[in-house]
Image (cartoon, rainbow, N blue to C red; front, side):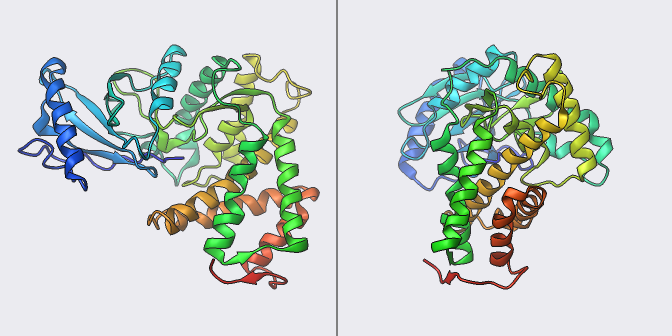
Length: 370
């Protein structure tokens, strides 16, 4: 997950890429050569190059003005650290589905530079009033419309499967990074069995859901306010898979950076369910007639996501030196504990997490940084 977060626009600089810091001078030379070759044909103004945004990966995004007005985005993704092929392929897939995704105008595959159409610099997150949930109702309904449209375009065999192996790999980030590296807790014996049994149950529940295209990080930071069109734009889709239909709505309403009260979460999730049902996406068991059955699946999917994200944010902090991410850990732990508290089968996992987090006496753990 990347969490694309555009900062305020930076004023143009006087010289080619002067406002952009390069830690590798050789890479800057290659970049300037590539850009110079595009400038005339694309009507670019290289002197206007500035940082547009960065994300949790090794990618960064630069913005550049055009002579005839408007702007373009440059993706800088070192090929030894980032594989950009999925971005190119899934961008085309989204455009085929009628979504507003960046158009790839030029791709230097060997060096990891890409010229993209610009979806603007205003994320859905920037338009949200966190203090007044209902004032954001229209914005979230736009997001729901985009999500249903994306899911309706789904076909098996196009995107990688969100299968048991991948779900388990993601869940392993929680004990490997959040528990072991961040909390200094190594689970052994009975406690490890509790975690493994809970993970097996979570995976089994989630794999029971019907499959659609899954963005995998569908949330306000990765949705762009309408820009030269009437539809929200979509970014950060390169990790998309074919998996549980419950995933993206869980991601949208149980945000990694924003918490809503349950009334608002239920309101938007019900409206998503109604639209998806009318579109034929809820023809599974009793989901078509029973919102509660679908909502339980959303909660189990959200639990998997938050265990994963807690591990990812610990890794971003401890391995990649990005401490701002782990500051949101209490939100994930609240999501995790709330869901575990609803389901009797998850009682042992709730007790285990409570002991680790210090809300009950800690028993039977081996502490110490690995």
